[in-house]
Image 1 (cartoon, rainbow, N blue to C red):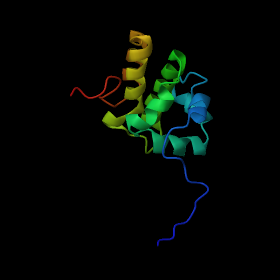
Image 2: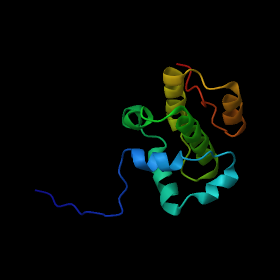
Image 3: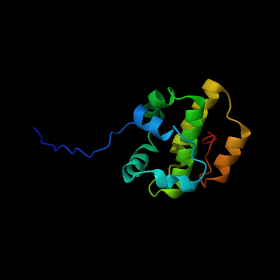
Length: 130
């Protein structure tokens, strides 16, 4: 028998719809907007940004088109401006982009240009080629 400890500050290891909807209630037009995030939000983003699609799908599938756009903006900016949010080919932006395309059609080209202009991640927004 093993004994473990309970940490009340431990973050859930899966995205929570309520938390994500709080973030996606507004647009994230530039890195300046990230100052609105609390330390807790930043730590949560660090923990969630590279989670597998199977963990994100239940949340992302419930978001509206505008919420998906706002999530892509936030995660794009987080990768470049919040330490520990480098996601590469595992980026949540890729999941959100694919969900938007499947559910609402391809996001407009202006969003694609915005993502590319605001990231160093070569995989955004489409994901890896293979």
